Length: 124
Figure (spheres, rainbow, N blue to C red):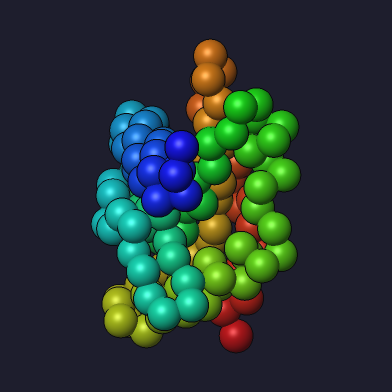
């Protein structure tokens, strides 16, 4: 398999995981504000709203939930924080809300695992 095909396959897998996570969160009462929000140097898989909380969600899908949980590295946290700062600057109404970063972990034959405040954002 070529590197380009591997990359396309990984992107397709990631998009499917984001759709599953979005559906799961909507079933829990969250409203989707943005999907795949990108800015130079960062990306947010999902931005959701529930009550007074604006939540940046990192979606990780791996062969096991444990592997998915290990996939959020300090570098990924820094990229998520950079993107969250930018998203908040573009959406000033959100500054009056509670802000946090959650994670949704996915693995085959396992229920999604939603961890509230799983990631410590650097919004400073």
